[in-house]
Image (cartoon, one colour):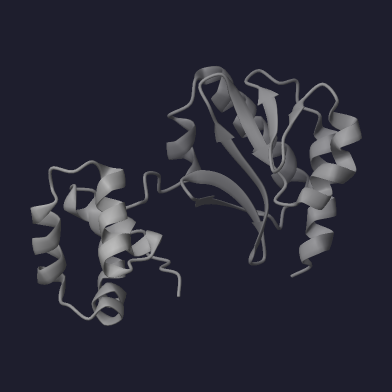
Length: 185
């Protein structure tokens, strides 16, 4: 069962139940391997105790002082971390889509701004140092619209766009409309 709470501690009851030891036991284990690097700690928990990636990550990160996986509470917090050019482009993209599709909800998921339609994600955006990545959450949609994106960097699940992209509103709206047809809430 996925943990909806972004806190690392939200995993603790399931860790105790699944691996049969109280958290004090796991904290003692983490203290013994505290000098190891993150990947080594994760591997140790997985190999020696059968931890899942999610549980190992929660325990390791908590032991390292990170109490939450959530870095941004709202999209505006995320946009503040972008360059001014990227922030302007990202905000414009979401404005275009939310104006055309007012039922879409702008949320934070995986520390990135996403548009949801009902319970399904229909569009996401993230930033790298040199460009933005957008995603319609569907390989079928990417395949269908890739002929219209010859000047963009179309990958398996995402589309690389310049940070100062001249927004193609029609393309974005068509992709989101196609994705919404797939998910029909």
